[in-house]
Image (tube, rainbow, N blue to C red; front, side, top):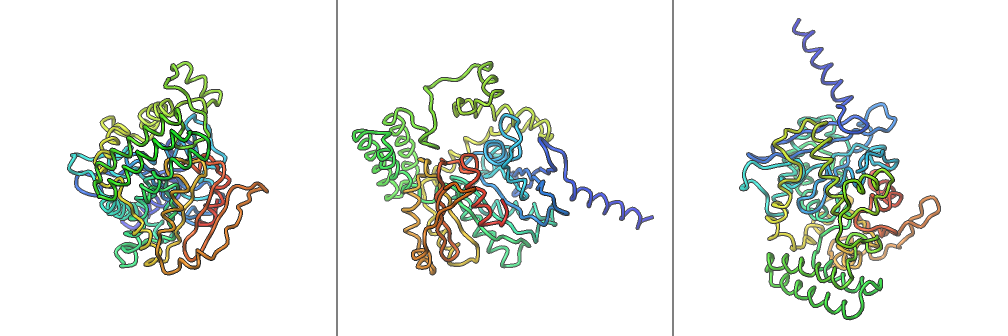
Length: 439
């Protein structure tokens, strides 16, 4: 009788791991919380690949980390960029889930559905964020041991790229000390906030080159940006973050409202659509006509309404309610560079490290990214310096350029702003193949 009971328990576990659960949208999923520390609860949403395979563990596991800090992977990355369903309920043809398993993590704690019981439990530094993520992975593997040997890849965007550097280094070290069974292979940094001041100093020249500001506007932007640089040089981090925000306002005034995430996208005057107009545009695929504020409100309604209901999230947990606090607490760390961590990844690990950058992104502009890449100092840098820059063609269309030397790769993505997976999925699929062999 005992043996029979154990058999059915084992069978139930196998069925659970093989099939996951029905969540929101198509495909098999799993989700839940990992208590990473006392009073700190990190939420994840796992999508099992829908590829035609005998078992999903034959495909890699990709982690997606959103930016902010305080933005939600389960919301923004999932519905706005690469999940199986978009913000308007339409299934994506180019979702990553078709080729691999994808896990969205609401990180740092306080982002999305993640939450803390007390303000004392928030993180304040990149290192603290990384340690929380390592604790999360320990909890995740305890729930899903079948993924322990599956190749793991960390993909990220914006401030998520900054967090991914420390996280990848900490996870690699824990893995190689034998404290955790994992198979981390690569880390890819999308339009990353690695050296904030190099990004800020690139805003003026890029806008001038695009003809989006005149020389007077350029001078006003550079005055504000150079003041930010002086505060960074003096390590006055909170003041530097405040001046960064002021510089963004100067950019908006000088450019008459350019979109910082894609300089060629249509922008509108400060105006919100009525609920009736918003519904019409959504139903008629008028997504580009919606302002960031309108899209944010739609996402908020989706996550707190249908998604929360489908996933059984308690009503006491309101998606995104702690996100602003997360950003405020990280102000002391926000403008600090992590170039030295990228150096460590390249010098002290066997991981493949990559950067991909949309040519139309302003907030983390490609010229600023190239500036901090020049500052990297690792033992195989000469290989990268001598490597050719080659074109990326997808279906005979020029989608960008790439350069690889040693264990480092850089990808220039055409026709894309900050959100590369959404703006240019064809080029993004090339980057995915480069790192995971799928996409």
